[in-house]
Image (cartoon, rainbow, N blue to C red):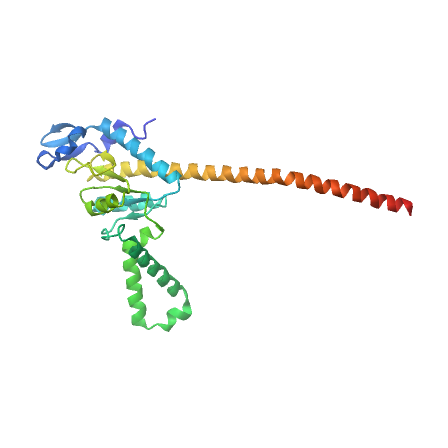
Length: 273
């Protein structure tokens, strides 16, 4: 069963591309027609691409790896923070910090700095010994770090994939991912080049409804993957338990056999007395 139907895509305005004069010829295979100087995307192809991307993200989540979502444009920020935060995946909605992936150890140091500030603030003896000015400076530094890196605090290693809302706007993030051979999933509008993107989703990357619908499908697929992973882990745990119990059975039987003669001999001694 398709994850999204034609009517839902149509209602969300996923089919609206950019003006004809702004188009990228590489997007021609995904364009259905032109209307009033605007390119209209082929929603049948979009639906297929959404399914492909969602299935791939589900498998990544099922394997226990992370997917980094990137969307710094105004109309996508809240949607990403809400939907992606709900499935505990890292995301970037503020300015992309250059070198975030290619210089990942430095980013991790900044995240550790944030953690050490939190520890300091939680320790009354340390925090109270600081002057009012020092506390204010540290609080401001913490807020700044949290704004840019708070949503990736749990990202302890490079992500297995990256999902980008506007591949043209987030070109620096896309370049870093490509350089590190990290697969890129992206909402690609008619003005963008789909060539560097591994999983192209031809769709309107400006309309809030379009972004919300596609993001919701992706996060639901991730949630499916996480749920299946949990079920498999639980099954493995119960299997291990059963295996341990089975291994312990011969030892229990042997112990019982040892106990039996001992009981017999003690009852004989009692009778003799």
